[in-house]
Length: 215
Image (cartoon, rainbow, N blue to C red; front, side, top):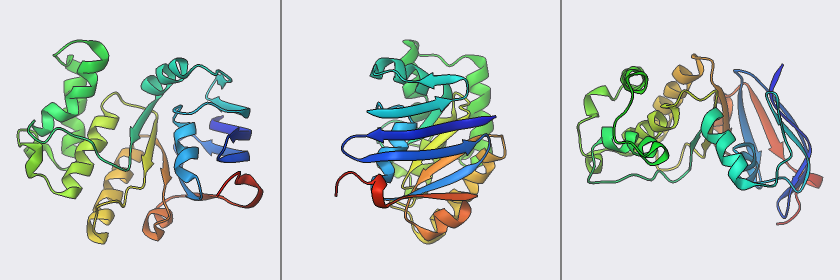
């Protein structure tokens, strides 16, 4: 079955008549105007003004942003274009922080600790976990954000403009990190106009023409 399916989806004032299917475990690049708005819609940050959005067995017709947030937190990881972090905290503390806010606890359960250790080794920054985030370069910051987004083992990973602040060489390395995550069966959906990013994905979806509501 399809992981994600949009039918005649619209979010005013950005786009309309979007028909999109993303299969489980696929990688997709979204390009064109309002690509980030479409990514945010898939990520349940925006509600549809028309059409339907199905995520696995969930028919998403709600207009309640709170309901969407619950769905996002259980199914998805999200990397915004602007990486937010606390410079004076360690890499480990930055990765753990969202979990502590969501659960109200200051201790990771054993399964999450194991997951963090596994991801930090897979992505190659395990030796940096005790380092203050202020000392990281742009690539290392992006890797820290990636681990944080994947800590709860999401089935879908959404990434906004991964090329931001990275050199071409760093971007190539980060794409390799994304491939390592995808190899675990994670579905990747990326908003980007960067040719290197688009070429790394199995499919490209472009928002154009009659789908655009405003300029």
